[in-house]
Image (cartoon, rainbow, N blue to C red):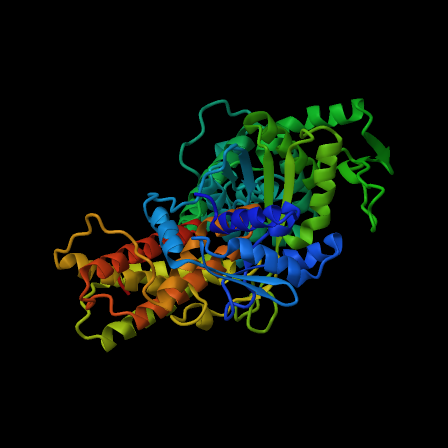
Length: 595
C-alpha cells in the first residue's frame, strides 16, 4: 500500500497544479498543531515569492479545489497562507481496513530492488566474557538487521570476532606453562589432536587476564607470548589446533550469551579469516601506486581537499612489516566483497572510532577494494552510562559482565511479577511461566531502554525506570499488547465469530486517533530503515500504545450492544496488536500472553 501521507500529498499537489502552480509546492506533512488539524501544507508560503501573490490568496485557491473531496473532512485556508487538513473518517477507515487485510505486512510494501547488506556488529574477543560495553553494538545491530529484512533486503549479520594477535599468543604461553606435556607444544608431533579442548570456558576466561598481567611484569614472558603469536600466524600446526579449540569453546559460550539477548549472527567470522587476503591486498596497493613508505611504515593517503580537519594517512603495515587493525579490517572488506558482493556495508561501532573508520573506508574506496557504487556506512553509538553519568561499572569499579547485567534486570522483573501475583490472588500462574515472563519483560526493558535513544547519543542505564510498567518503557509496551490479547481472548472465548467483519468509520475521536497512528506504520518502518534509526520505531510504539490505551479507557468494547460496531472494534484491536508485535519483533523482543 502507498503511504497515506503520499496519497494525501498526491491530491494536494494535483490541486496546486490545477491552480497553475508548480507541483513541488504540494508537499503535505503531519501537523505540528494537532489541536487544529491532522495534516498541513505550507506550500503557499513558499510559492508566494515566485508567483508574486499573497500566500493566503494561493492557499484559498487550492483549498477551493479540495473542498468536497472525499479524502478530507476539513480543508481550511488559514492566514498568512497555511492549508490545514483533516482526513475523512470513511477514507481513513478504508485505508486502515486495507492494512488489516494485508496479512503480516499491514500495508508496508517491500523494496522493489533488493540489495545485499552486510552488517558488522557485536565485535567480541574470544577467550573473554561479554561485558556491558558489548551491549549497544549487539542490540542496535540486531535491530537494524531485522528492520532491513522486513523492508525486503538480503541482510547478512557478521559478529567479527577478535581472534588474532597477541591475545592468542598470551593464552598459548600460559597454557604451555600450566600443561607443558600437551601434544600441541611438541613440534615433532604428527598424530591427530584431541577433539575435546584441554580447557573449559571458565578456565579460558581466567587464563587470558592472568597471562595479560604476567606479560606486563615479566619481559621474558611477554617475549614468549609474542613468539607464540608469530608461530601461530606462520601456521604452526599445534598452535593452529589450539586456536580452533579456543574458537570453538568461546563461540559456543558467546552464542549462549547472545541468545539470552535474542541476538543471532549469520556469520561467525573473525580477524583470523582475513589474514590470507592480506599479502595479495598489500601487493596490489603497492603495484597500483597507492601504498608508499613513510618513516618505514607502509601507508595510503586518504585526505581530501574538502576536509576541514587533518585526516592522517591510513597505515597498512608497521615499520617492522607487521599488520594492524587497519590491515585486518581492509582485508576483511576484500573477502566480504569476494564472497558476498554486498551493495552496502554497515559497521555498528563505538562513535569514538569514527576517524579510524573514515580512514579505512576512504582507503578501501581509493584503492578499489570496493566498487564506486558500494556504500560504506559507519553507525557510531554513544556510551551506556550509570546514574552518575559515567560509563557503567560494577560497585567495585570494574567493567560489569553482560550476563550479570541481564541477570540483575531479570531479578528485578521477577520481584515485580511476584508482587503482582500476590496483589491478584486469583491470578494463577506457575513458577515456570513467571520465570519465562520475567525474562521476556526484562529483555524488553533492556532493549527498549537502549533503542529508544538515538544511537549516537550517550544514555543513562536506569534499571528502575526501564523496568517500570508506566511511561515510555518496554514493559509499558508489552503491557499494552497483553491487554489487547486479554480482550481478544475474552471475545473469542464467548464463541463469537468475525466473518464478514471490517473496520468501520471511527465512532469517536479516540478511535480516529488510533486509526491515524496505525496509518503511519508504513512510513515509520521505511523511515527507520532509510535513516538506520531504530529509535523512530520506539517513538512510534509509544505513541501507538498511548493512542490505544486512550481508546480503551474511553470505549466499552466488550459491552458494546451494536454487534457491527463491536466487530469493528475487534478488527481494530487485531490490527493494533499485529502492528505492535511487528514493531517489537524488529526491535528484537516479544510479548508474553499475560503479565
